[in-house]
Length: 82
Image (cartoon, rainbow, N blue to C red; front, side, top):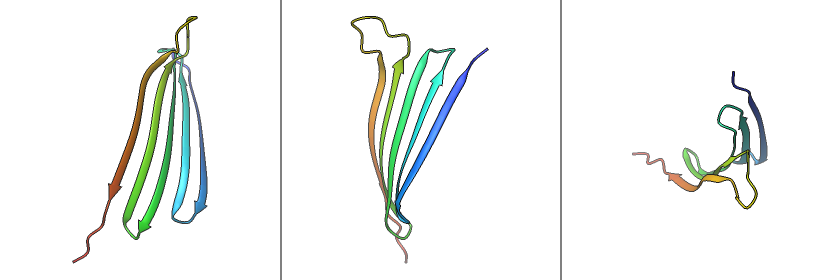
């Protein structure tokens, strides 16, 4: 049996920009993970994403940070019309 607890939040700053966050706990892996993403549509069909991911061991022993994985990602796409 696995318990999976998830919460998600989105904040829209403008019709073209938003920040979303996802936090999740998985009991079978004793893992706590977070994903935070900024999306900006700088031109119609063209977007910039800035993403931060982190996964931690929820059963932290003393003297350990519990960090398993961390990533910072930037993605940009551009629509070319002919």
